[in-house]
Structures are given as C-alpha cells and as structure tokens.
Amino acid sequence: MKVTVLGTGGWGLTLGQVLSDNGHQVSFWTFSQDEVDLLYREHQYKDKLPGVIFPDSFVYTTDMNAALEGAEMVLLVVPSQFMGNVAKQFGTWTPKGKKPIVLCATKGILEGSLQLMSEVILANVPWLDEDHMVAFSGPTHAEEVARRVSTAIVAACTNEDSAKFVQQVMSNSYLRVYTSTDIVGVELCGSVKNVIAIASGILYGIGAGDNTRAALITRGQAEICRLGLAMGANAHTFAGLAGMGDLIVTCLSGHSRNRYVGECIGKGETLDQVMSHMKMVAEGVPTCRSAKALGEKMGVELPIVNAVYEALFCGKSPKIAIEELMSRELKSEIG
Image (tube, rainbow, N blue to C red; front, side, top):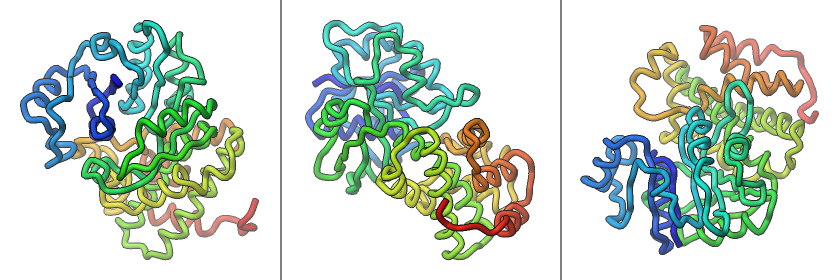
C-alpha cells in the first residue's frame, strides 16, 4: 500500500525502510529542499545514519499534499517542538475516501500545553479521531533498526483494531510489534524516559558505578509509573517494552543522544556548550521542562526529573544534585 512519512530524520527514514522491506510504497515529506536533493543524490543521510543506503524506490518531496496523495497510512516522525506546526499543515489535507491510520513515532511532551504527541496531532487535524491515532514506542534506536538488528516495539491505540493494523503492516523478521490500548502510558514512557536517560548520562560523566545506574533506572521507572497512573495509564505498561524496555536502552546505549547530553553535563559542560556541537535533537532536554511542569500540575513527586532540571537549566552541580537525592526523607519502596 501507499504510506507517507512526514519527516526525514533518522527514525523516519528507518521506519520507511521497514515499510519498504515489507513491500509497501513509501513517500517522504520534508520542509527542506536541500534534504530532498541530498537523499535523491546519495540515497543516504551520512549525518544521521552513516553507511545506511536507502531504497531507490523512496520518493522525497517538500510538497506535503503530493506526498499524502493516496496514503493509507501516515507516519509523523518530526521533533516534538515542530509537531504542532507540522500537524497543522497535515490537518489542511483532507483524505479522499477512507481515513488513513495515523502513526506517531515522535516521543515528547509539548511545552506550554503539556500535551502528548498524539494529543497535539488530534488537536490540529480536524478529520482525525482517536480510533485512527496510533502511537509507536519501544527500545528501537534507529542506528540498529536501520541495520536490521532485531528488536520489539509497541503500537498503541484506544481502538485495538487500529493497533493490530499497524502490527501487521510493520512487523517483520527483525521488528516484532506488540499491541496495546494504553496510548497514554506508552507515550508517557517514551517521553519521560529521555529525561531519566540524561540522568544516566550524568552518572557516566561523573564516573558513578553500575549499582548507581541500576538504582537510577529502577527509581526512574517508579517516577514515570507514578505520573502515568495519575494520568489514567495502565501500570503494566511501565514494565513492558515501551516502559522498562525503552528506559534501559536509552539509559545505557552509546547510541542514546540523551545519555550523551547527560554525560557531557557530568563532565562539566554547560547545556549550551553541549547543544552547540550536536547535529541531532535530544528530546529529553525540552521534555525535562514539560515533565517537571506536568508533575507539578498532577501533584506527582518527580525527584529525579527535578534534579535533572536543576542540572540542565539552573547550573546545579550534578554531584550536589545526587547528594540531595540520596539524603531525601527515607520511605517505603512501594507507594
């Protein structure tokens, strides 16, 4: 079938490759004509996925309506801070006939409104409803999936049939797709785990031990779960692929941009210095501000998120932040 991917970042291109491997026709939209020219000329994006060659059959364009023509499924894979504008432009297009399934593979919480990405899309696309809105999240670094290294991921939608549709379209020998109806939990996991990964990077930067990182990941998962339960999510989601699975890989992998940011902070760089030499977006930076605000709004305690916020934006020494976390009032692990 015809599938359109809005966004030509590493993850969007990788998902396009998955679809192509599964026999589908894939078109990409980007706002940049330079990217269109580069991808047609080289069939790769060296800055994002060096050494990965994409199929000659890929179609690239800056004309969103042309890219969307005849699409039976649309993937939105743009940085979270651009999702609102892209969704608005997407919303001006009206499908002819059957509504396409819309798949969001971006992880983040919009600053200001504190909306999850599916909520941003639904708010800006008049013809779209929850039954056709699917979130896609799990332990899936593009650097490995693009090289067909096996992993698993979750497709989440309030309508189980739509999640199963994505499962059938996207699954293959190296990408196993599970379904969920807990779209809030799946999206929240995919967003806040990036903040915990920055904290993990800070631990790498200061030379902390394996015990410390394991404790961080476990307590980070507890924070995400607390926030998710307050928002009506299913507790089981946080122990699954979108929860603990994605949290582990993002906190520990050398591919993780969020871990990299934290590692540089732990070694003494400022956030401005770190961002100045990064070519790709680290979603955990804006999400940290949003997660902190969301925790305050929901009345949920998020000590690790707050500590990362202070290290990133308030200049607090990571070592002092860790000392403060360790000296908090003692409590039961559960509750």
